[in-house]
Length: 112
Image 1 (cartoon, rainbow, N blue to C red):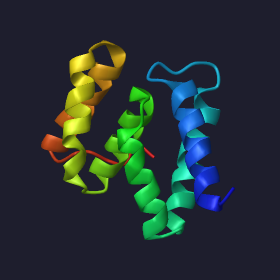
Image 2 (spheres, rainbow, N blue to C red):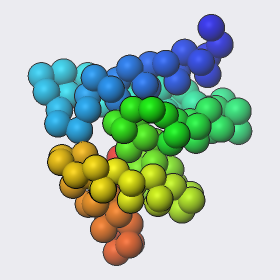
Image 3 (cartoon, rainbow, N blue to C red):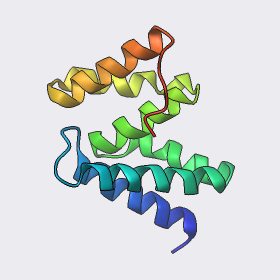
C-alpha cells in the first residue's frame, strides 16, 4: 500500500468512527484525521487529489470532513457537498450548516 493509500485509508476509518458526535476516542480520532491529511498534503497534487476524491465518499462523515477542509482551503467547489449534508439533518446536518455559515461570514478556519 502506498503512502497516499495508507493515509486515505486511515482518514476514512477515523472519520467514520468519529462520526459527527464524538465519543471517548474523539481526540485520538481527530489526531488521526489531522495527521492523515498532513501526509496527503505533503505528497503534493497526487495526495490532494486523493483527498479531494473523499468529498464523494459513500460515508457522509468522510464527505463532511473532506468538504469542510477543502472549503477552508479556499476550494469553493465543495459547497454543494455540505449543502447536501445539511439536507440530511441531525447533528451532521447542523455541523455542515455551521461550517457553511462560518465560511459565508469569512470566519472559517481549517477543521484540521
